[in-house]
Length: 416
Length: 170
Image (cartoon, rainbow over all chains, first blue to last red):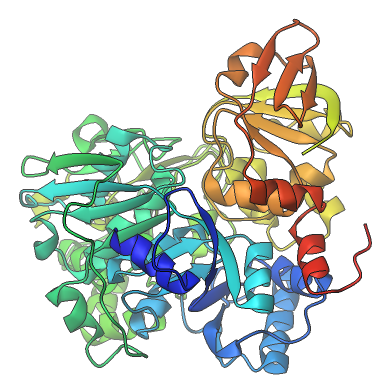
């Protein structure tokens, strides 16, 4: 059995299962985001009265943090009231940041857990060896009512990563290359596991990028086998005891792909699809109106660090604006302590409250018609960050910082 | 699963994401009728003016990719869409639509066989899709037993209510 199957089997109280089988699983942690008041509506529509296990529920007020319309404010008010009434103590209010980074910062996700959040990028927590997937509002309401949810046991695809990262090349470039090669629907209904010698050289932060972006190839969940890097990260942070499971020798993957990234250059996903991936060299010199650094994909301490390194003693181009959104309160505090925020603000960056901000076109940093944005976030669908005629280039935090400084798409390697 | 539906087709390409089906700027809405006013806004601005109850959406691969927003499925259902036929669906959208009682069928090659406005009939018991306008027939992949159970209950909310012995108005 694969480790992912073992996690599902444990949650379903079974010893064995078949690929494709539909089974009910107990959910170890369920997260709700402030976009989805429908979750509470569906809970009451189904006759829900008391949440099955309030200790296993986290409420995130992250997408509208802080509220910018009366309706957003009223939705958040209803969520706060729900948490108080139901005894949900893990209310992450508008000061905390983006759901996935909060879960990591607070050690809420451990290896072997089964996690669902009403956010598609919940695949991020495969970086900790969890089975973690995004669900809709009504699915989450079912978890609130019953503590369980149905799952189809997925096939597992293996992506084997060899080689070393070159100058100016990061995990974001690696996963963009993979998505470009395999396509936006390659992973639909399936789990994606990353293996290979590159992983030992990647921090937890970079592993989270790989797993986070598997959503953009349609994956149900991502998985990286926990190792010393994972366990060191969780040391003193994990909120509960956990047992690491491992894939049995000889497990047969549905598909296997090997990528040697030694000669990989910085990548961009050009408009308007995340699998429209090219070497950044093809777009050098393209003017950008906004550079956006943040989100559950690209707003961690490592990301702010590389941006600060590029912009130290330099200035954001007068032709562009640089919107910086630390992914969480924890990230903001650490980045302040290390001086990165000081450097970026002095260089001309616009600092935004830890939140999802303009990533999904709702908040803080929205694009005007015809503008071009380079972003460290995950998506470049038409209209994703504002007007449908805006063009979005998805790239690494280093490439975003280099573009902020030059006002055009630029190769970050020369600044590193 | 039993039932036969007939409706006119709207036809779209591959990778129609949920930001196009329902833009992020309206995610604070919850009333289905208000949500429906923005259905397909970024892929087909004429959709809300043209759609009639019982119409059917046909698409190529990976329909509903991207965000987990249930609003995308709510918008289509509240617009009167009776079924979506696509070469494949993104998984969260698939669950969301089935949960709402909106049937989705995986139909290989369907997008190439249907033009906008074609009259389609879908026989759920056989998974047969007939294009009445051209006379061609396509066969959908069978639905899983669990999905059929959800759809036959009119969605997962009535099903959960029934399982918990609660009265379920249909």
